[in-house]
Each structure stands twice: as C-alpha cells, then as structure tokens.
Image 1 (cartoon, rainbow over the protein chains, first blue to last red):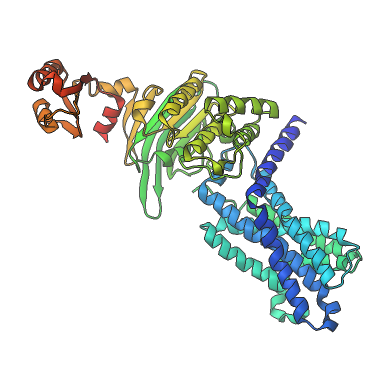
Image 2: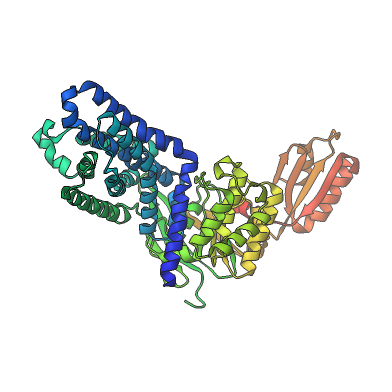
Length: 249
Length: 310
C-alpha cells in the first residue's frame, strides 16, 4: 500500500512539473493548436459547394479537431522532448528515482491537457460553421484523451530520435502534415495506395470516432475506433518507454 | 552492501566513437562513505565523462563501476536515483519551475513527503540565500542564482552520494564559502562526495583525497598533504611592488629565481625551501621596503601541485 502511495505521490509531482510548462507556453499551446485547424475549417467551408457541406462537414471538422491535437501532441511535444534531451533536462529526470513509465505518462497526460483548449475551440466553432450538432460533443472526450496519447507517442518518438530541436520541428511538421491531409480529406477522395498509410495512423481512428458525435449521435463504431486508439496509445507508450528511450551512449 | 566503498572504479575506459577520442583511460580508484574525493584536471581531461559514467548516463567502453559493492548497470540501475545526487556541469534548462518548487519537487521525487520536502527546501534556500526569489521562475534568475538552485536540488533528500561537477561556477566568492561549508557538512554526516572543480585553492579545504586527471588518465592520486609533499622541497616567494615604485618587476624576478612569473606588479618565484628566508632578505635589502607593498613566503598548495603536474 505504501509503495502505491509513494508512486501516486511521485506521479503527482511529475505531472505538476510537466504542467508548469503552461506558465511559459500556454499562449502557443492555445493559439497554435487552434488557429491553424480553425483556419483550415474556415477555408474549407469557403471553398466547398454549399450542397457538399452536409457530406463533408463532419469529416472536415473532425479532421481539424484531430489536427489541433496533433499540433500539440506531435509538433510541440517533439520539440519539447528534443529540447529536454539537448539541454540536460532529460538527464535530470534520468538521475531521479522515477520510472520511465511514470515520466512518459506524465508527459503524455500533460500534453493531452495542453491539446484540450484547441480541440474544444475547433470542435465548437467548427460545428457552428458547418451547422453540425453539438448535442453529443461529450463523446469527443475519450477521443481527445486516447487520440492525444496515441499521437503524443509519435511526438515523443520524434523528439527522442531527432538530433536537435530544429530537426525535431521539421520531422514533426512532416508527421503533422500527414495527419492533416489523411485526416481532413475523405478516404473516397484519396488514392487507394494511401489506404495502408491511413490504416496505421491513429489519427484516422480519432477522426472516425469523432464524426458520429458531430451528428449528435453515439454509435457502436466509435467503440471499435476508441479501442484501436487505445491500442495505438499502448503501443506507442511501450515503444517510447522501451526500445525508443534514448540509450546511455 | 555493508562496509563497501560508495564507488569502486576499476580500469574504467571510455572511447568516443566519432571522432575517436580516448576520454578515460584505465581509471582505478574508490571513494568511501564520509569521504570527499576531488577530480582535478584541465578542460578536456575526462572529468565530466567520468562522472557521467558514475551516474549511468554514459556506458563505459571497458572496465567496471561498482556502487556500494554492486556493479552499476548504466541507464537501467534504479539504485543510482535512490543513492546518488548528481549536479551536472551545465545549467538546468527547466526554466518554468519556480525556485522553491524545483527544490521541493526534487525532494519529493527522492521520497520525502510534502512537509519534509518543504522544510528542507526552506533550509536550503536560507543557506543559499534564495529566500527572496523563492517564487521566481528559474528562467528569470541570473546564472549564479540558477546554479544555486541546482545545488539546492542536488542536496535536497540527503542522498548518501553526491557527485558535483563544478558546483561553484558562476557563484560569487562570498557564497562559494557557504557552499564549501555545506558540502563539508554533508561529508561529516557520512556522505561520499565526488567533486569536480577548477577552484582548486578553495576546494582543498574540503577534499580528503584528490585525483588529478590529464588526457583521461590519473596522473596523481592521494591526500592533499601527500600531493603537496611532492613540492615540499620548494617554497614560493610572493612579492607585490608598491604602486608608486619605479622598480622593474622583471628585475625583482631575476634576482630571485629562474622559475618565476610576473603579472603586473606581482612577482611569484619558486626557490629551494632552505634558501627561502635568505632570498627574502636579499629582495628586501636590494630593493628596499619602500618599494614593496607586500612580500611573503608560501608553502606549496594543492593548486601549485595541480599546476606543476598538468
């Protein structure tokens, strides 16, 4: 019991340490993660025919919401991890009596929180823009959480792999662009050879899981998408806490 | 393991691959609990590489590191976090932390409850004169203040081993004295302290044993007294000329010895110990007391040994 209390207490401290990041960076987390996805939603609303709004609206809004998560969980997190690696912050954590799992969980959870405002803004304004229902918006909560975890795994992996913060920014932006195009564009409009790529991206399932909620309904298909997202989250967590964790040289 | 040294290092070698550099070459030494062990050496001598292996952040190319008798497994050894507090050479970049929470949180991660961590953080902030910036973020502090916070983060939790890489860099002289006293108090309390420093003169008073490194090798190892005994046959004469003196300092230096240094009005020269007093008298009689602001004899210090060997 005391071991559990100790672990919970240490995890709370680790989470507080990660959340302290908000003091210096809440503006970029909010603005960057919401401005670009919202801008794309507005742009798409302007360029598609009015009779296509009903057909593509859900896809666009869900895709933009997942993009908001990706901006934070992939791009910003990858840069943060690369900076920690570069400037000794990671060594500080490595010299403490904490588990990798606890550190990674605290990082993933904090960045999920950082992605929340952007996700809410995009879903709320996007739904209004495309006349979609907000009645079942609560169903976006598990998508946000599981999607953030799954995508943050990609962000952490890029941060670990990139030699410095600049390259981490470049690689993560490429990953984010992939999420952008494969998430916002309907599958029917994409060439068939991209199907395998879509299948291995967690963002695909996050978009699919968000769409019914934008119709004001909750359907069973969401459950399978959420389970797949959870699986992605578990795999990416295992990968960054295990084989992808930077080795002592 | 009871009665085991805090650290045992045997034939430790580290070769970096690209470019190929032998950073540590067959190092062997041990550090006991309650002992302060200094690592001295010029930049690039391999000191930081060595301490990063001691905390498991680098993997040795060959050789062995034992922590309290058990082999250290780099990167996978939980004992390091529980027993070793490491102060790296570089400034910590977690600028979003506030001073008090940075120390308190580190204490809590080392197993303290909130109350104990708060108390110890307060004590450390008092000693390190950080009380007036306790709620300020690290990124808003001066370089010296950030270093003090790092020292606080290292000392909190009272772990049995401290590895301090240049603890007093960027810190003003008045506070440096406090830090040395803080380190000495931890040694008296039974901690093993491994200290990398360039402040040889100041560190001498807290070091029980010293290893001098050059190009990755230990070129001297012993107590400060043993190392200084190597130069005991010599004495240094220090002369400072008066500001209005017209005497050429180089002429003073030539009068004393071939082994000499001149810096501005200051002349420093080595002479055989048995000739020191007569040489001092010669300087006074030749140039007159009015030309001299200060003149005295200095027995060899650890810094002299370090400079002589490196």
